[in-house]
Image 1: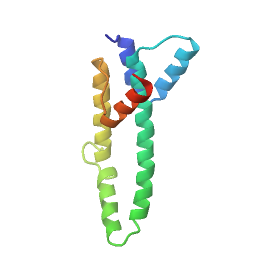
Image 2: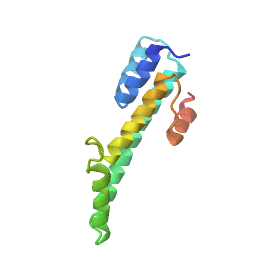
Image 3: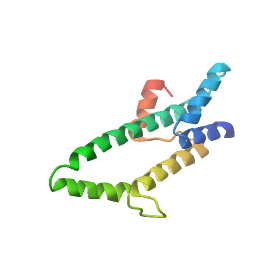
Length: 132
């Protein structure tokens, strides 16, 4: 069973987009201590999620830039982009913000209960490459 410190480290890692986990990895390496597979899995998964979201955002911006200049279609693409990323739906949050909040809540609640959160593509890549 995972102790409360490991759970807290995992939660903070997700909340800081992997930054806290990276600092914790460096600290543990310098003190030559070992970490549980639970903490390592969550650190690597949070870093992978952050990089993946950055890449998706970058590619999406390029797509919107190209699609916006297409006659007739560009207007609807920009409208859909506004509805997803700019128009507040609930308590000032956009649709994309609500989805990211739900993902964050899922990851946090899973860590609170001491379970490794499963995200279909991401968790499999972390397990295959790092063995956690």
